[in-house]
Length: 429
Image (cartoon, rainbow, N blue to C red; front, side, top):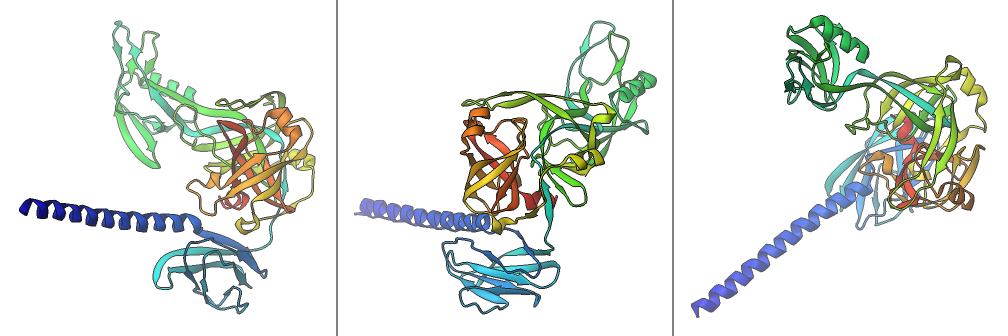
């Protein structure tokens, strides 16, 4: 009898554990799901009613903390608090520019999150879609790895191992700023075998690192670090706004060795010529091959920032005068829907729009530059490139007459599909 009770008690205990674990998992998953479904930031145009729907599995209550922002739903009665059922649509209206806060409660009782609401003017920009050559000068000399040095006596040493890390930026040696690799080489040879003080930027923090250079068998003094001071490539210009500011790529330019977004001092856009296109295949993304013209007369603009959502700067008069097409109104998250859209590209040598299908819209993605999933359906583009190829990142996405996004990545296993970013996220960089 005691044995049976023990077995029954153990079974009940097991059921209790399963129940609580299931409950914790359900609550955690629900919390994560709702967090992903509801954006942390929204933009609306001043003096225009904007409509939204979050498609949630249960009721929520939305609150405005300002009389400037009016909420509405099917009742058509604007107020400062509304209750939403599931995927019920609601509207936002604001008469004045500024940033405001919306509160959200689950089941009308439990505070869940705050949403920043930006009330903005109507913005316009020219969707470009033209390839450009990109040159970036890093802010400091970037360490991409460490290696061994063969000394004068034939021994091999690795002084930078465990001291310098991939992704470090050497900004100065003994108080002398470094602009490029040549300056680093000169400073090390001038310093000789004495201990050197390196000013290093690591993950946004500045560190002082003391190292003693080693004389290599070629007579130069070295740290045993592989370094890089610039990077270049070909990408697509997304837009130029009415003030001559541009955005391109929809993702940052990362170092090919470290995978980190390059921290830049400055950069420039240059003319480029596409010489050929390699179509994408399963497991192997295609690529646009071309040449960049670096002459002074080929310069098209200056690059000010390199971020996770693109590169940004100012175009010059040469590029401004060559832009084709009329400015389009900027569309925001709520303007984007699953269905037909267009990407603008000069991939064929002629600027034209190609039909795509937006298959998924993620209001609050884990990565900003993967907010949209798109599929190329245009037969001409599929014949030419097989879909999306490297170099097309930044191609503007147009839907319902508005500029709403840009192409950012291709699916490695399916070149007809890829990711996109909301253009509002690029313009808010």
